[in-house]
Image (cartoon, each protein chain N blue to C red):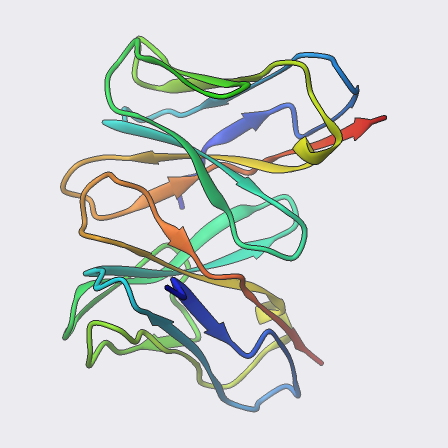
Length: 111
Length: 113
């Protein structure tokens, strides 16, 4: 089945550092979503992107919908310990009724 | 407002046993899905429903059945459990089949021995 490739798979960073991660696909999507999963919980929606080139922020998080519509990027500025978790991207194409999820980026923040 | 409720939270099954994972949402969402999460594999779609009485297969449907008799409930049945079905299962719902994103339940961790 189709899956999205996320990079990096995991990362350790120091508190206060900025974080960048990306998601790529061989298919075009109409919508890109970014989720965060805390340990033992379900994913929670962080940011939704609906237009190629769109840049959207949610607090310290900024995400971009790639111009080719085949990729998306998430940046976290000034990371804090509670940013630890798994970040998933998801793509959606109108009419398919399916969200395709990425493999996840596991973030660990060192205080 | 409870959102999406999954039960049980943990379950251990023996190979060959059957069981039903329950999922209920109280947001009047039309669209519901089941995903499984395995290490390094992300979330893979098992089955989904675009409304009561309508279900369809996702990427990994083998060994699972679903039904949607009401808007609120979307149970996932394991017919004859296998060790390969050891996973964390998430139910999710969305207000319709468009692009507003899912609300996820907190998951069911299933171990098949």
